[in-house]
Length: 72
Image (cartoon, rainbow, N blue to C red; front, side, top):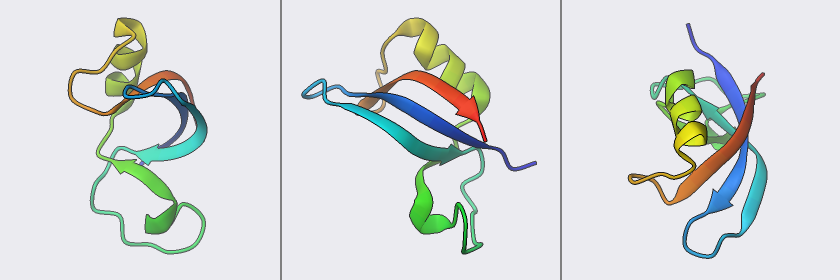
């Protein structure tokens, strides 16, 4: 089942904060409209990945760190 999450966080290189970015757990997104491909910031991120990033307060893989999220 596809899930969408709205995330907030910051970029690691300059600590600039962001909010309202949409991520989804599947990377095969094809539909247009609300949360269409152009709306998705990051594909393939499971809720457990988001929770782990928040708990660790860092990311060793990505250029950003998530500080909070909500399911939408």
